Each structure stands twice: as C-alpha cells, then as structure tokens.
Image (cartoon, rainbow, N blue to C red; front, side, top):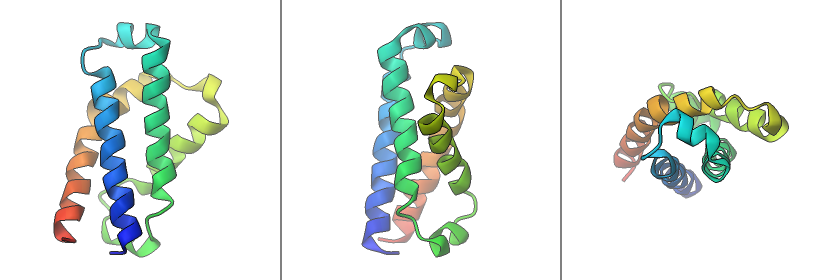
Amino acid sequence: MKSKEIIAINKMIEYIDRAIIYTSDCSFERFSEDIKTVDATVFVISQLGEVVANIEKDTMEKYPNIPWRTIKGIRNRIVHDYEGIILDMIWHVVNHDLTELKKHLINILNENN
C-alpha cells in the first residue's frame, strides 16, 4: 500500500472520530436542531468521500468490504445538493456505519504496518 493511501486512511479515521464526537451527546432531535453540529458533521462525512480519491483502485478491490463508492457518492450528494441533504441519512451513517467503517480501516492499517 502506498504511503498516500495510509495517510488517507488515517485521515478517514480522524474524520470518523470527529463525526462521532460531534454527535455523541445528541438525540436526533437535538442534532437536527443544532445547525453547527449538522454543518460540522456533514462536512467531515463529505471529507471522507474526498479522501477516498487517494485510494488506488487495486486497494479498493483488495478491500471490497468497505463501500468505497458509497462513501464517494455521499460526498457528491452533499457537495452538489447541500440543501437537499436528508438528516435522517446522515444520522444513520454516524450512528450505524462509521464505527464499523473505522474498524475496517484500522484493520487495513494493521495489515500494512
């Protein structure tokens, strides 16, 4: 694995941690009413997709358990239709998908050290 990919995966883990921190003491209602938390969370989720651009196709194929295309797709949706973001979807990603994604990313790093 190339060093730029390792840097990208570390950055993804950092963004995941931020999203979890931003929402850790929130209910969905509180989250959806707090524009700062929404903006910060949506930003770091979009950054996950931005960073995926640094992952080589071979690496993506080697780790098909990570939804690389979906991560990029969420980023594109956020960037191109910010006003149309569905907060339920963002909430679901933060509360159901990011912890599992982080585990997979850590495993990749451990395999490549």
